[in-house]
Amino acid sequence: MVKRAAAGLQLLEPIRVAALASGVSPSPEPALSDGPTAMLVCHGMGQQVPFETLDALARCLRDRHRLGGGDVDVALRFVLFEGCEQATPRAELRFHDGSPEARFQREVHLYEAYWAPLTEGAINYWQTATKLIVAGWQGLQQSIRRKRFDRWMFGRYWWMRIVPGTAQTLVALLVVLAPILLLALAAGVAIAPVFSWWIGRFLSAGPALDAVLRLLIVAIVLLPLIPLRRFVRQYLGDVIIYVSSHEVNAFWQIRDKIKAIGLQAAAQIYRALSSQPSADAPGRFTYPTITLVGHSLGSVVAYDTLNSMIRGDQLDDDRLRVVARTQALITLGSPLDKVAFMFREHAKNAVVREALAAGMQPLIQDYRYRPRYWLNVFSKRDVISGLLDYFDPPNQADEPRRVRNYEDTDAGLNPVSAHTDYWLRSVGSNILYCAAMGDLTGIERPAAAGAPAGARSVEKAVKPAPQTAPHVEW
Image (cartoon, rainbow, N blue to C red; front, side):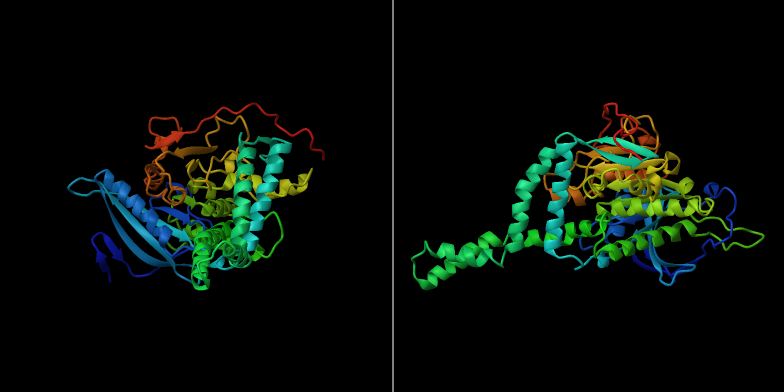
């Protein structure tokens, strides 16, 4: 039975989906089989409403397709994958062209890795503020002292050039941000009474009026700090919980649970079969192509998820064909470079540790483990995002699987909307749409004529760097 909620939108009955069992081989050449494409989106930081990011991606793809004169039917259903206890929500998009016959073009299934409740209330303001300041201070020391940092990837240490102006930016942030963070921390605890007493020394309008004036002045000073405290704890707190994996702390279990959610969602998609396998008729994968999308902190979750899937497939003789079936990794407003630079263990000559940490990340082990496309969209007005320079060795401009950076020049002056609205602006929406339609050839090179409107390609020359850091001894 189908319940129609609106034109072009349906709520379908739940279904069960077979999954590739352990020890069973799929049909040969599954990537050549017919079937829909899947997109797994990982939401960003902050208090996210369930299905909010899934809705944003569905609207983005629908609106972008309608710009070309086509239309999209959207069906929603819960899917119970074999071997799972809970059903998974899925949005099924069927794209049609603009002809009178509305010819079918493509089917895309959208999934969401939802982890927001795990971090809610798990970190307090003091923990968030102090760890942000410490991370900024460590990054500043690295920028001033050495003007580079060593990063183990692709089988060796590389000297990674620190972006010019990093030290000045960190100084400015520490000079401005640290006092504000500490001020907001003390708001209502020490500042309010002291400030009220100090203001009272200059008032002489009478006890009652003086009290009112003191309260008014204190409110004017402290009220703006309330949303700041909420933003720092609820948004930046999520970042601290997830990215401080370079140290052992109380958030270790939360990080593992978030990673488990991303891995479970991805495993369901990669293992899904269009038919139940048997000895005589092995099943075929439901999705010949899969794209992972991560926004904000969700880009770090998506990165970890894909690494885990590839690493697991390495141990399983490439049974799921994870690399071959992964069309793209798309990161929007990603802090991955900042995480790699600031939230890391600064231990001298820790070669074994760094090599093992890189061993958990096949995406920086060898380009043969990468999907064909890793597309990163950032905006200079989004202070959280940035270029992703630290996931490729220097002087690899001709490597087709390197990270491709696109600057979103359509973002407004508001830094909040610059970070949250990548789905609504032309650069992000065009890249997502091309991935959904299975046609990323138009953005094969950022400088190509097919580059997304509103994007500025970022292809900068990198000064030659030695292949290995000679000061490292082992």
